Image (cartoon, rainbow over all chains, first blue to last red; front, top):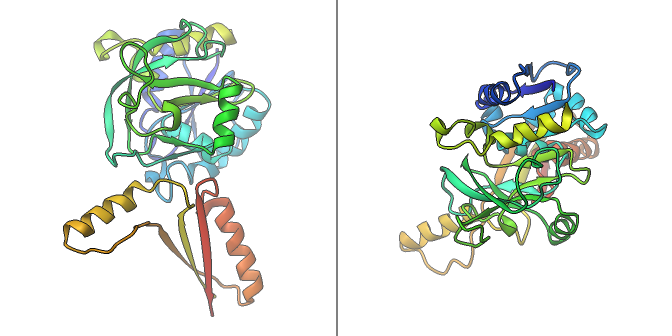
Length: 229
Length: 80
C-alpha cells in the first residue's frame, strides 16, 4: 500500500501518521510538500492533523487552496482513498471533498483527551477491521471540532450510512454528556457517498501503541492495508 | 478602490463566542442586550477603479475563500 501524506506549513501530525503507517503496514509513506503540483502514484492520501497556516482565516481554508490540493481533489474524485484527520478533516471540508462545517467547540475550549467512539459503519476501507458498533478510544485534540451541517445534509448522511464514528460513553451510548464539542448528532467522522474519503476529528495515528495510551487506531491503518493491498 | 468585507455566521448557526461576549458584557454590568454575534472584517485595497468590476471580484473572493458560505454570510462595502 503506497501512502502519501500531505504536509502543510503548520501540520504537526504528519510524522505520527508516517510512524503509524510504517508500524502497521511495514511500508514507508511519501511525505508530500503542499507546494508540489503533483502527487506520486499512490494508493492512499492522508491529510494530517495540525494547524496548517496557523488556522488563519478559518481552519483548513488556506490549505484547501494549496497547489497540491488540485491534484488531491482530482485523485479523490477519481477514487483514490483519502484519510483526513482533524485539521485534515477541516481541509477536506474546505476543499469540498466532504459536506458540512467544523466550527469552534461549543464550550470554547481546546479539548485534548481520549474519547469513546462508536464505529457505526464498518463497511468502509478504513473501518472493516472493527466490529459493528464497536466502542473504541481515540484522542481528540482540537479547538474547532464541532461538526455542523444543515438538516438535509444530516438526513442524507444518516440515510446513506455515512456517519462512520460518533462520540459515545464507555458503554457505547450516544449521549449529550458524551459529546465533547457540541457536534450535530455526536458526529466524529463521516465518509463521502463512495466511502472512499473518511474525515474524522479523533487521531487514530496517536493510538497505535499501548505505551501511548491505546492501540485502537491500528485498525484504521490495518483496514486500509487490507482493502488496498 | 477600498473594500470592507463583513463576514458573520448565518442566522441559525450557533455562535458560542458571541454568547461568551454577551455574558462578559453582562458581568461588566451592561444590561438590555438581546443578543451578541461576532464576525470578521477583512479590508482590501484594490487597484481596480471600476466599482462594478471591483464588486464582482470581491464577491468572487468571498465565495471562494474569504467566507465559508456553508455557515457564513458576507456584506461588501466599497469606497473609492
